[in-house]
Length: 539
Image (cartoon, rainbow, N blue to C red; front, side, top):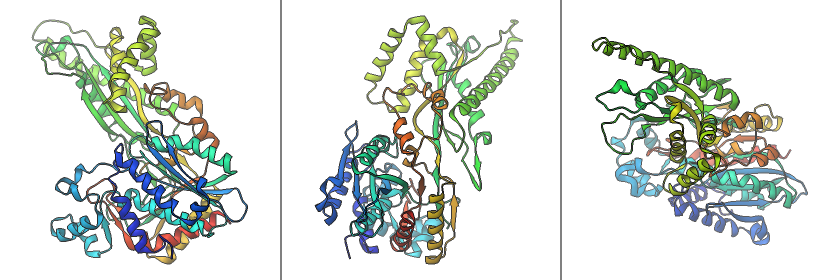
């Protein structure tokens, strides 16, 4: 039978993986990689081919695992099957945090308390086919399926090579996959591999509440984090028209971009969600009666085919419009105030700059060595700040060199950056997608839809480089942490250029305390569908 071939064995393996509290950045994110390595190393194939199973180390001390099974038939054709083993934290579980990583026990708890649960969750519980807990859906069941495929490959089930890749940190910065790109190139050189397809096993994401469809995704959405730093003018709260409130400025920028339909893209039936703000705050560090003259707003912006130079142009244009609205609103309000005091207001003129322009101005007036020294000091000493906060503090500090430019709005970018990748027109991806849809249609009742992009973001983004270097530079030169503490394997991505797709388990509630996995499909029908799809890869 093997270790992971039956539905019960897959369930047990998924639960074992979930029992590692592998929240991104935790010790157990490392521990779970050691567990995967240990379990794979006990397979007969890796007892005989020890060098085909490797643990790799990231620069920050985390681990990722590659497991190569070479076909008994001499060939260079290689399928990458992949996924991540980190999960988001469990604060949303509230009083049930202690059970979040115990799927058996937590599922029993959910069943016992079903009458207190939302209607959709209670409906699934009454169906009796669902496993609850952090990571069951996103995405430890997917990794369990990858391990099953590796075991089958070691028994000679496929006519081509299978390379499994299990990485950390997908939920934050994708450090694992960004570093694994170079490792993939090295593995291809050492073992004479030609990567024909990368198959990610992220779960199906519902398109709407109650959606029962399965989805084959032929790519993965792109993501950027543009920010707007708003620098007004200092003033006492008793003299508000002597200055310009950064919060006032940021509110207009947020109003301009939040949920703005002009920043969505549509491809076939699929449409990107509109941008949303992830951070909006002033940058005062303590209470005082000075108005907060600096503020920042940071957005999540998803895209499909847009180029970074075009996105940057659109964001600058939006900032110009927001600045005009700020100036107009400020003038109208000061005019009403000035009428009672007999003075003539001076109109505010807000500059729109990129981070690169801000940097160049600081260097021109203070010297490159001094600006670099102070920025290096900030980045070396803000050890508790994540990449988003460190980016904001860097922009804030450099703006302090450029007070003569105020009032101003500065466009910048923060990590992470996920390039949009797709293989919608690739013939092999088309063949595999059609085979999957046929097999899924014959084995279960759900409809199967074929979409160009996986909507949840994924590590597939680092297996292609669809944008030009010139276009990318427009964004990267406005990213303060670029080549400081954040980078992309651009050359490796360009060389890899692997066709990509995503097809995985069915569940609901990813990143919520009701995260759950449908077992009969994910452990029963899906493994057979995946095998048929893999056979199509090697035809």
